[in-house]
Length: 283
Ligand code: PMP
Image 1 (cartoon, helix red, strand yellow):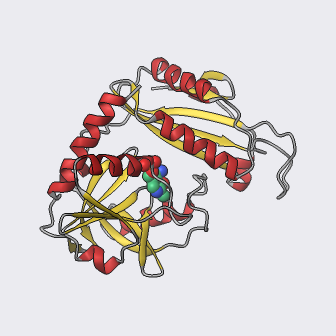
Image 2: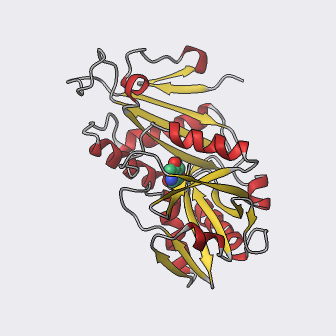
Image 3: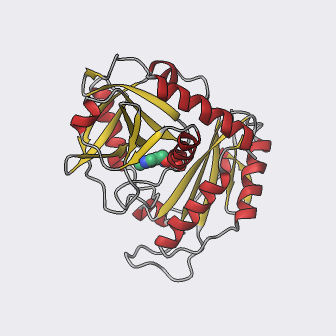
């Protein structure tokens, strides 16, 4: 079925939506993105994603091509035109089209693309059964806090996981877990939640921030600090957070079952709390 996608001010059937071969997103991965989840036809944490988009653009010296209010309107229009009840909205902003040159072009018009993906986000087998992860070295660049479209290494990590019969990879740098290929990594030990502190080494997950807040509201103890792979293997539970995965339990690391090899109680509870809170606050 053909979707309606948004490209630079127009809503078009996906077959008619085009960007230039000179687009710097295509030539240099010179662009940023966001993924916002739709539940019950409404957007989860739109403001968090819009704020991070503005920050990513600012770090790359790009002007925001649309205001936050316009962006919200585009998201809502896309949900309506595609009759999207549950799924994702992908948004990408690139520096635009210009003759190929490493230096940033002056006066290029940013390219703005948004499209929907109608995928289940609540009823996923991974939420029920948990996922298996492998560990790989973190070979990405040093500004992982900017949500750029240069996703080749995470993509390779996902393929390495698949080949190993697992679902995802946790990346490790200087002995510490940074994050998953497309999610933030958490472990639970003796009732305490542990997730890496913010910095340039990880993406500042919108779901991570929400789960931190909800965990504190539920009187759970949280530590924001680096943890090693050995700590993760010895943890009672582990899980990942992202806009599309919400809270998804991890049940195996590098072929070794974690804890009892089943989704843990804290991960299950946080997933429920997160979904309830998101439904209540979606706009
Ligand atoms: N880390 C990385 C590397 C990611 O790609 C993502 C998802 N895009 C996340 C963390 C989770 O971020 P969010 O909760 O905002 O989806």
